[in-house]
Amino acid sequence: SQQGEEDPQALSIQEGENATMNCSYKTSINNLQWYRQNSGRGLVHLILIRSNEREKHSGRLRVTLDTSKKSSSLLITASRAADTASYFCATDEGQAGTALIFGKGTTLSVSS
Amino acid sequence: KAGVTQTPRYLIKTRGQQVTLSCSPISGHRSVSWYQQTPGQGLQFLFEYFSETQRNKGNFPGRFSGRQFSNSRSEMNVSTLELGDSALYLCASGWRDYGYTFGSGTRLTVV
Image (cartoon, rainbow over all chains, first blue to last red; front, side, top):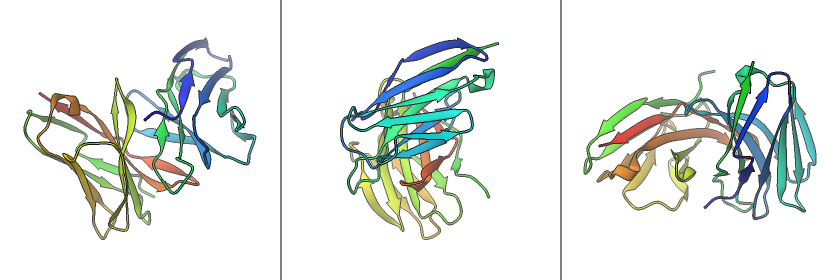
């Protein structure tokens, strides 16, 4: 079952611009994570935000979490061509479960 | 510190055959999770093992099974392969509250 749903499905921007991706989920969570995937390879963990946090930064990444709206956003500032990838949000099941439930992802294309 | 290692990287199998995929987690990690990624269904959780015990299982048929050894290495097995089993199979190790490290995956093609 899908938990997180990303929006938009695809995003094309120029180098130097900011990229914003949104994620919505359905049930209560302990935390929400963002991952990047390059060309069908393995996923790279970017950032984790806990349910009691509202905003978190890591380098050029900024993540927000609104548990009342069950939504999160990932902002990549000053995008580079190397940021071209698919980005996925993932949530836990909020209970004893340890599975990550992934959304369909946002495909980001950054052109120079 | 070595990452998560998955072998083989690519596999081509015929319908009806069975396949075994291997995953070695980061040293010291006792949890291994498996995911299937397809264009249609996206990333779906298969199962998780912790200290040789299956701790959680996704909604997949019984043809999909796995195990974990005392050294934390894990294998997953798919029997009676179907065309729809063609996918990228990813394994991950880590902790729910800190994030997971994924391997590069095994690309399985069923013909």
